[in-house]
Image 1 (cartoon, rainbow, N blue to C red):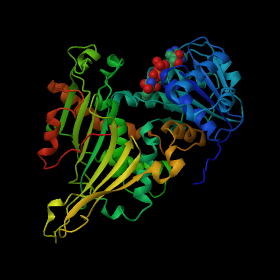
Image 2 (image 1 turned 60 degrees about the vertical axis):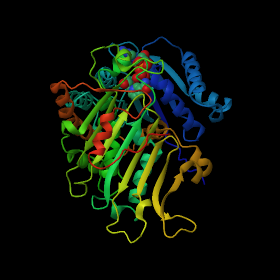
Image 3 (image 1 turned 45 degrees about the vertical axis):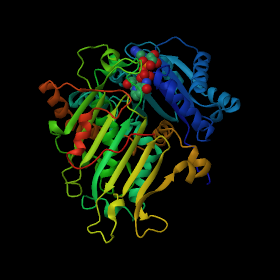
Image 4 (image 1 turned 30 degrees about the vertical axis):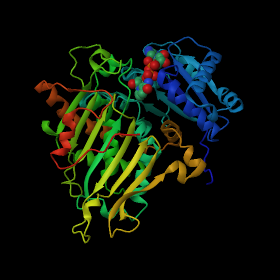
Length: 484
Ligand code: NAD
């Protein structure tokens, strides 16, 4: 396969919070990978901006360490690393004060794309937008990138949108949901809209149900106090899983264009039905295997925050009425895996004498590990013994199918940051989408808070609370096994 890397235009990328955890783990290593991939123009500059005192050299040393820690040796080399580090600058700024802003203004260059990555606490977004404006650092072409969490309910999301809108238009705001940058997630759109095969079947008449699973083996490790204010619904469902659901359920957009795609996603969110209390199961992991339970991790023995949630979601439109979407996500589960499974309905009539081997067709889209797709189809069991049916996977692992290029799937952040520079908002959430997702999630959360529901405790290393099994059993269905 021929590599088709298209270099982007010269840019200055300022990373507010350039010395933070996210910059270290994701943003800086991803930028380096794009340099190695040949996408970074010679004139590109990356400016770390944070509160700490640091020289350019200190910031380069910090970045070198981050890259060495988070990228395997096979993905880095001394020559390209030195070239990349030469692009880095550092400026000390205080988002809430006046320190450093004139230095930053002197540093950014006229005539190149300016992008500002807000990798800081959301409480600082407003101050950063204000300072950029006040000091004339951002212009009408500049872009800002904002991280999750985007609010913790509809009101706070609206407030955040309003604060940013004071100085930036919607076309300048890139709300990151890194799930949208995953190769397989984008592939979902290719599979749906570049093939005639699936689209005619993509509706309630042919699809029995959809399962979306995001399972983690880790607990809230060291972030307990922060996580306890959020929980699985806010941390995973309202954003990442909602985006996946939208990509499965949306109508074909008229063009692969940012607003065309986002208009269709918004319609799905608006069509979501309220979720009844009996269609929600929340859980908290217990202590086990020498590791503390959620309540200890959260440092709050009274906590009612969920580290696991499963819910049955309905979409009230012509395409989907009658096809439930089952969503589940949790921590300390038996395996780390993210997948979407689309289960088709039974054929109307069986012509075979031994239909016992029959299983539904399932299209499985794996996000991690081993990004790829699997289509479960029925065949004749090979050999003698008459016409017996067996289910086999038509497996397409991208790494195998696409050779070297497939094995080198870029990290979501690589793709998304380059999209910011290219000015392509397709894979970013629009303000009205985020607000609509909160408008759906708020009453669900308020409901369990008002009822005082306690999450069920579950054994670590399992599939979650027993009650979550019932959510599907009572509909005559089963969850797919959680496994890597
Ligand atoms: P962090 O606490 O590790 O880093 C915060 C950064 O902000 C530091 O560089 C610090 O110097 C800077 N900062 C703090 N106050 C400042 C001020 N007044 N002026 C200028 N700079 C200031 O945080 P993080 O984990 O890197 O997270 C950054 C953002 O990304 C947050 O919004 C977080 O919710 C989000 N996020 C983080 C992760 C992650 O894995 N760490 C994942 C998703 C989203």
